[in-house]
Amino acid sequence: MLGAMIRILLAEDDESMRVYLARALERSGYEVVAVSTGTEAVPHIDSDRFDLLLTDIVMPEMDGIELAQLAARIAPDMRIMFITGFAAVTLKAGKAVPQAKVLSKPFHLRELVLEVERMFGSESVSGLS
Image (cartoon, rainbow, N blue to C red; front, side, top):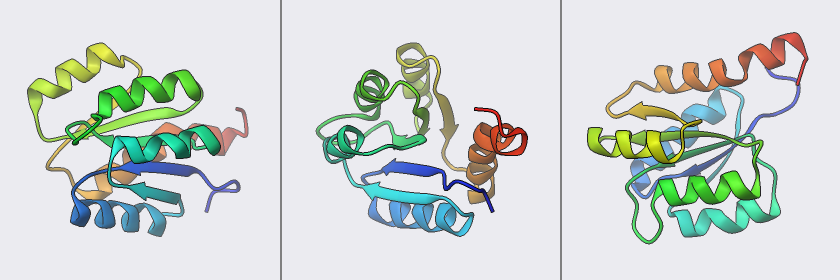
């Protein structure tokens, strides 16, 4: 269990996927706030502190790339991980938000949790920020 809870903001418009991902991350000891659109995620980024934005790229209203670019401006310390099933979108995301990690669907929950742990693992072990 991590000393300080790592907080994840999850934006995913597919409800079953959203519930599934949130549950897996919570079981792994992360605190998750899940929303269904990028638009819905914005006030959370504005008013609250998150360690990671985990977002689907293709979403109605505001896509994950726009959301990530906005997040990078509001909360530059927040890490970003994209989830997508589309290879072409992955390239676009990599150009738009080069610091982000992209996880391609389909993936196993274990892979997602391992990627998140890898992002934060070294910090929680060494105690350095």
